[in-house]
Length: 164
Image (cartoon, rainbow, N blue to C red; front, top):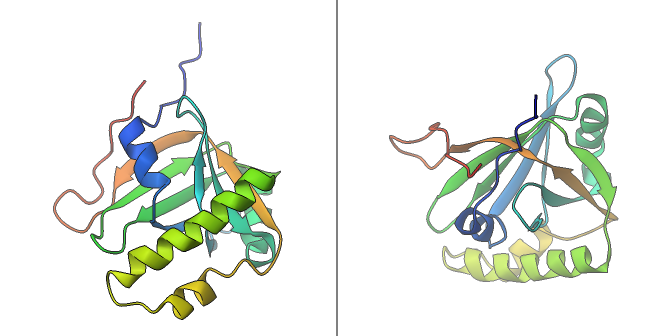
């Protein structure tokens, strides 16, 4: 019996995930104690079956330990100016090194967030301090196993249909 392919992130959702959105990655340990960290950008692989969020390793010690232990991750993506929010979960997360392309992606993400947060009155200096890459970046890569609308309102919590 063939194993079904992982759900696929479509082009519209991929564009949202790669845009100027606040990204929070979260895990839990064996005692169900959560760990979370702010990410510095997202990469969606061609075909939409795998994605990576970039985190500063020294800010993500517990999250990285949890991923190495149980491989589960949940990531929330929120556009500050509209509150559109999506949560994507994965059960096969891994920690991977980043290359120059990912470092460039993180720098572009910080610039995009400066512009996005300016729309709601957040000063550039505050955004740059919040998103300062003060250490080595690593990628948390995973296949999406499920996705949910998290935008405040009546649809919050509704499962997102992902392409097969």
